[in-house]
Image (cartoon, rainbow over all chains, first blue to last red; front, top):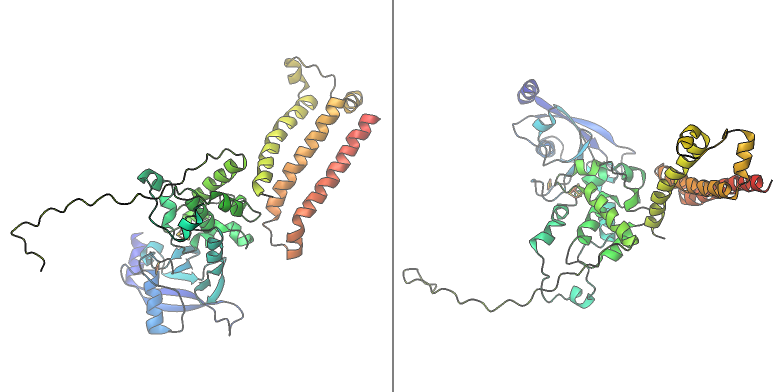
Length: 279
Length: 120
Ligand code: SF4
Ligand code: FES
């Protein structure tokens, strides 16, 4: 390890970057760039260096640079990662191969076409569904929720829609219509939400030929997820929910009520004499 | 139809196959063990013994049920595996029908033999 770090700190890095320009290239190819190593640099820093100093035609997606927006998903040394989230030291190699995420089309170079991810996400109705459609469309107040009820789905709500899980999923690789770990995990996230009443509609969507039952728990999605969402766990819980509903064992859920209007405000303490009063 | 019904049937047939095969193996191969349990089977693989079973309504129904259950369980599992292969779209679309077709043919042939032996 010490030797590895020494070779990294002393040297240069070789970035083997996938290139593809759909109007010109028939297929993708790798282009090599040699860049200087700096301590603590992320793969995204390397790509930014290439774009600024070596080849400004290189295309990749980026926004927050801190693992929040989920834009910079790429296949880095054959593992789906967020380029801003992984440092060169973590990879421990001075040759780094960067490709566009698998299981998606490519728009250009390292930019995957995430349309299927968003379409599948949309298809499972990823929002609170209420039987009172009027209240749902024109809400008058928020719904109440206890901290315990929040715990039921909190972990699954950390999803940033980066699409790494779908890129890692072997079932998505063989069945393009498979709903995939991201949307299935989100289906469970909303079904487990105490404010939601859309479980029946959602289970009808996921209990289909390309739905939840195609997952055979490879677990690659959970390994790839940079936010600790554990989509594989959510999918297993979703299977249990669907089966319980089929067997009519699902307990009827009382959706959280609308929060009552705020109680009368307590009178504010008088401003002490010695404090500067607002003019 | 919802996939969970088929899935549930797959689980039920899996458990059923386990017990039905256990009866089948005990009757055919573990006659000493069955003897220990108080069920005496004379030479289970001899012609006479096979024909005795084939012409008994209980055994004939048992084998037809085992056949149906095993065919469903095997073909549903096989379909799941095959669905993951990159078939040309026309085959992918027809896979369910192909599986149902194979199931009907195998069940028809197997139960024909069982019924033929029963009425012989
Ligand atoms: S579940 Fe994880 S890997 Fe999948 S899209 Fe959400 S954050 Fe990304
Ligand atoms: S740039 Fe936002 S997650 Fe990497």
